[in-house]
Image (cartoon, rainbow, N blue to C red):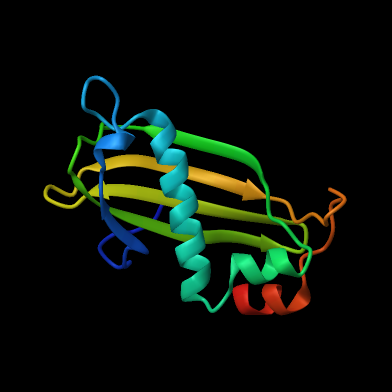
Length: 138
């Protein structure tokens, strides 16, 4: 699912698992990973000079149309994690991002994932992504 090479890539975000993100067993709740993937996507776009906020203010949203998360090893409270994200497909009507979440102290791959996004307007209709965004992504 995720072929991100962490030996040659930089993480888009490094953070610690907060207590509120864990379950009764002290491990990160499965729903936390989805939020972390979103954080990675937003930071990846920001690193390319693109702003989700500006896109949304312009009337375009990029909702998730598909989400795939492969849980491999649990994260525990206070683990320091590196989040990697890459755009693996950019078409006018579809974007696909790949993710890898790695525990910093032992380089264990905790999660790999992928999200697909479809640009829509304020009425919820599928539209072409603005050309200036596509140019920056390609």
